[in-house]
Length: 158
Image (tube, rainbow, N blue to C red; front, side, top):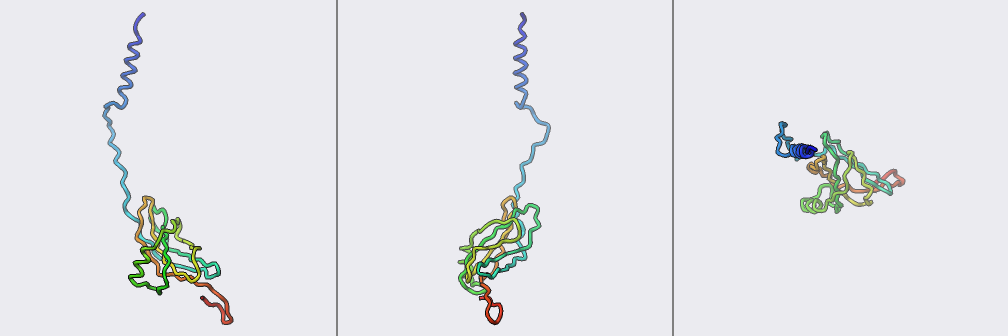
């Protein structure tokens, strides 16, 4: 009987040793992916409408971004003491310190149903891309919630 088994074992070891053990590849290495650090452009055209009923809401709209990697928009909100249309710097610093992220939306519209009659709110909107880069905040002036009532002279906002 001849010893063919030794040859078969040797061939099997040689085949295992040739796979990935020091062989040099002739293909170029794959470069690491580039990291996107560029934020999207800030939103434009921020506008507000109010549903002045007994159950009021505020609807914010803006122009949609043109970036191909746009993921959506962050909506921030802060309650504002009744300071007039343009708050002084001291009040603005306080408001900006209290502004909180409310939600992220995928469309260029947000409806805030969590408002109270007589309350004032400021909003900030940012664009966010798929890499998590966030644009500069676009800040609104205070939006005061009023309710419409009818009296003998017609429609009146309170």
